[in-house]
Image 1 (tube, rainbow, N blue to C red):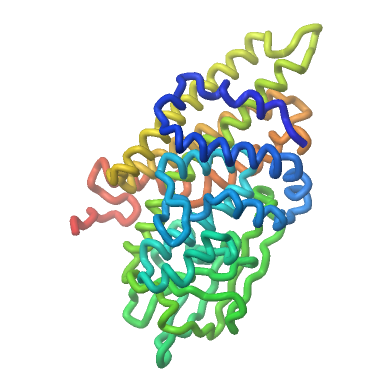
Image 2 (image 1 turned 30 degrees about the horizontal axis):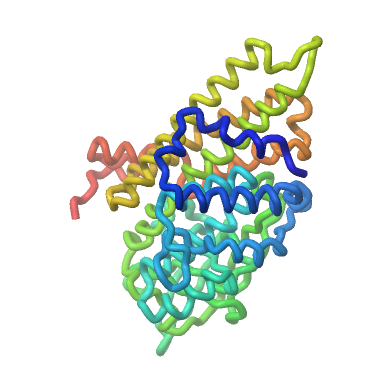
Length: 401
């Protein structure tokens, strides 16, 4: 079902932020926006309600030529950080589930290989992933280790010319459909490495998680690894410790801030369209003071999010973005988006819990976006560590190495 919100997108650019953005980046955004309006929005509610992934969209998505995001070469999109952020926002504006599918494949999986793989490994996997002939996944989170991901329990034991993996992973987006999953594990020396497990490898089992109340149209998996053997050529050549894994997370976290912006924009646009059309007591409810105050405050928060995301991405393009900067944006934008979407759902009244109006899906999905790639509290502690020099996570002063 298409919505009137698609014609109201300029209403969320109250400060003409588009004027700050390179036209080439805007062209990429508009291409994704048009695709989502044509292919995603009309069908996504049905898939979300059935908790089914719309696999038929993958070949069409591949034709957009955006896989890989900021990855340079090997057939990847090679876009700027600003463009990658705009793309992340557009996916979220249409649907959080599709945004997760794209983010896991293009950012977490492809950028892990780009950042930490050898040239041979990049050439072996990235071109097929850029064409979306092979789908990737990122296996970090474990049943007992979420925020403390550094405490990885999955092991990699040297066995001749390869490694044997044992352990479990949880919440692995694309894990059940991926052609290759990057499994993060500790070796006998305690060092963390990335091991690319390809589809069909014995000992690898992925089970789709059920019962989710958010991002229902994308599949997360629980993964078990039982004596799962991979060759040494499948160990990412340049990953030596958890700091290397953190590079990937730091490089992708800023896109989650953009995703929060995108879903907040959609919620505002939907609420604005609804309140202009919905009449009570003989007048459109948009004419009432309480409604206008909510709309004004929603727009103010969206505008601050736009400016923050734009500035963060320009710093990323200049090589100046820090982990704490990305955490600040993720923390701030996700919290604001959560409030905006709740207010938007409230403006729909009873209609706000019906999928046909789209706002109910966004209201559920923001809970996942608010949580993944670091909870609100963890992001605050990362920022706190940066500004005080003291780690509230470990209770120790961080080393300056």
